[in-house]
Structure formats: C-alpha cells, structure tokens
Image (cartoon, rainbow, N blue to C red):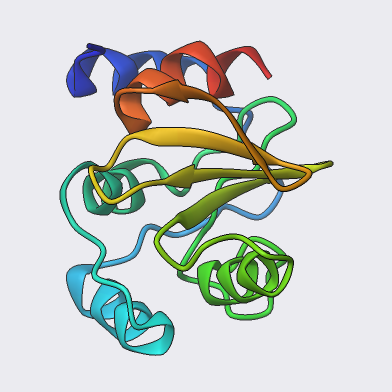
Amino acid sequence: MAEKVTVLEMLHEKHQKPIVALELPDDDLITEVEEMIYVQIRGDFRDFLLEASDLVIGTLEPVTVTEPGSHTYLPDVASDAWAEGLSRELLPFCKTPTGYYCLDLEDEVILWENGKILGGWNSIWSWAEEVWCNS
C-alpha cells in the first residue's frame, strides 16, 4: 500500500503549476459538498481533497470542491456519473474519456468504463501513485 506522505511528496514534485492556482478546501467546505451529494466524504478521500486537490498533474483531473463552476466540481461530476448509470454506492472522483475512477464503500478505487467495473487499487493514494502520476 502506498504511503500517503511519500505519495504526496511525489505528487508535489510532478505538479504543473497552472496560471491560476487552485485552492485547497477546508473541512467546512467539504461538509457543504457532502450535504449537496448526500454522501459522507471520509478517510483517505477527505485527506486527498484537503491536501492534494490543488495539484495539476498529467492529463487526469481529479475532482475539486472549491470551484462550483469548474468541470471538476465534485457535485457536478457525481451527478453526471450517476445519471450515466454509475451506482450510487460508488463515488466518482476522476472522469476519464469513457468512464470514471470511483471509490467504493470500502474506499478502494475502481475504474468504471462503459458500464463495467475494471481494475482496482487499494486506496486513492495507490491510484495517485500508479495512475495519476503517470497520466
């Protein structure tokens, strides 16, 4: 299992500083988003949002919670994914051209593409190390 601290260091090294910097959320903002999507954001995903959702790396764009107008805004991404048939038991956190990377009820990451569950990672930090860093 990937260690959060080590992966965060790697993510920060690969960060491509955008022209307009993204902001990190606080717990209150995450709570507001939870109320909007009727899903509790906990554990590693909460930590990911609090510590890494301001990073820009490669071609994948994980969700954010600080910019309601953004194409990565979690409530909009989740709404779109659920409307496309993704189970409400899965929380999408990164759109792909043909699906979504999602968290299941055990906070494991799965890839949902064209209505099928493919692949998996034991945590969002493992996914970040193996997939996001190499996108």
